[in-house]
Image (cartoon, rainbow, N blue to C red; front, top):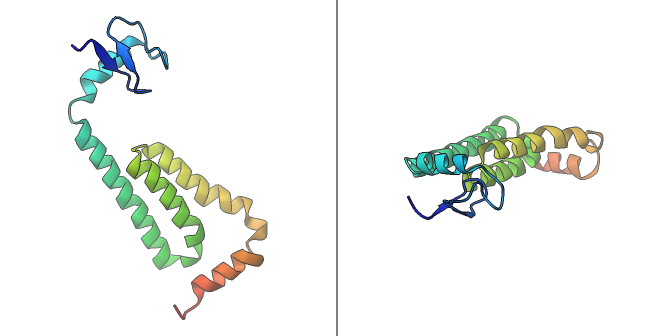
Amino acid sequence: MPAVLTCPLCGGAVPVTATACRDCHLPMSDVRREQEVGRSGSWTRAVGVRLVGVALYCGVVAWCAWQLPASLPFVAPAAAGGLVLHGVKGRPWLGMLAFAVLVVVLPVLLAPALGTGAFSDLAEWVNDPQW
């Protein structure tokens, strides 16, 4: 066993003789357990999580572009944020939460303004048959 372990929570170096991580106070039993489990197949799981994220968010944007193009001003940025968090950072739950907040909560907050101004102009531009 190495003299220094890596904390799975904060990524800090943890001496084997310590009782917990000095940065985030994760107990040493959890640090050791994660060192043993985290090594076997961790890169395959990481690649799988990222590929599922890319497929999920690309599929959502494609479906919305095909079925409901007026929703693209909300869905495309939300999918980009979800893709960064899920596909790049490897945080699927955080990516899905950001996606849900941007797709559900943001339109509810902007509902009074959706029929006027820039949003209606954008909707007309998206629905314009000339492009």
